[in-house]
Length: 489
Image 1 (tube, rainbow, N blue to C red):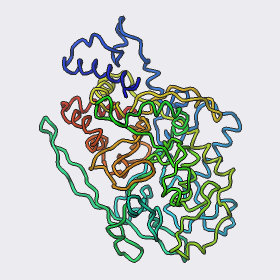
Image 2 (cartoon, rainbow, N blue to C red):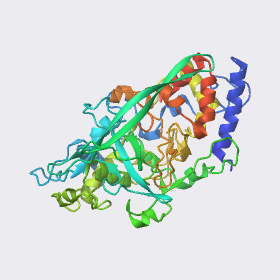
Image 3 (cartoon, rainbow, N blue to C red):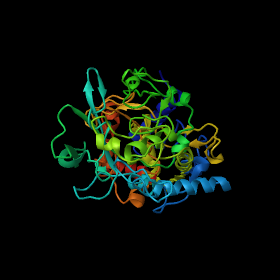
Image 4 (cartoon, rainbow, N blue to C red):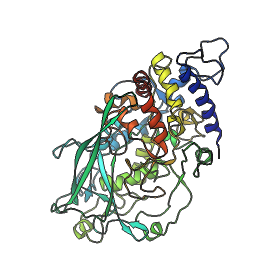
């Protein structure tokens, strides 16, 4: 299947590759491109202002430390109040039950963090710990074991390794990470290195978890823009899929149809699904922002909701099961609704330096190397009853929200939901250039192994191997231009 967007991409690729081949030619013919718009005979394309407005009307001009924490413009009085309340629940610590703190007790019994913002610092991206004493939280470990041709939660530790617990409840274990340097070379002879992580998981007594354990390290993804991605019609996303690579471009992409059953249940193990499109999480396991919020509350903080009413305890953890709770559920419908509203209405920061030669050249190369095959440059949202700024918007998130095989280098070997052990959902790239400003680091990919955007590109394999090879074949100036474009997002 050759989708309309991929056909447009093909035309753009042909035009841009001609420019690349001509190395400074006049670029005649083809579709509109950055840099063309000043020509009197140039085809009409998005203006610089439109390209800068990554989230459409849900875009804000903020390049500072709070760039990811802004509300979408135009919220009414109730909307601003809901956003403020949700912001408080997102950022405040949960405490152990029973407590005098009204409505914030029920932490644990097992947990990874005390608040959402512990991992999503300033609503941005998490990073792996620098060492064993690093107090920052932002990386978690999903667990399972092989069960015939399927997988099942770990019989003792469940679906996620919780390295913290309330008093009198044993923690589940810990993880340590070491890195080795893997050397590589660009086609022009320039050397580079990639940091290859090795994870060591041990239980509370320091014993290895065992070779039969399947695990997947994940850093917390950014929060902003999720309300827009939720509104992209599922049929538009599915229309971009090419699971059998019928067009022969080496890029397939599968929609993640998710289960409407409790994680770890017999129904989930039997593969029951309701056909909703998963679009959130590193493997697109959750279909809505509300589902993603409830799942994170339970697994990361250990607080329950009506959507996820069971504590993250297994039958082999009696102290966990016997621990006091903060109510049933611990996060009531109104609180879950406020945090969901807050997440949905976080605005997208505008692009910077649009129309400048370096970023426009990088944008051309982003298409020419094939990066835009998965990191689609444009989507349109449907209608919204949450906020007018989210409704019927042309957005530029640089994702197709599909699952792609990223090759053995990035594979975790752990199937989850519709994704196999080497598939990941294409992450959005909007705002990625502000990561260092907001979060104080430049760690990327699902486990934060990439120490820069350059390393993130070089880690791409599988369906993205062609794009990675074309990036490696660029001149140093063109590589810098492509990275400059990414930094402008």
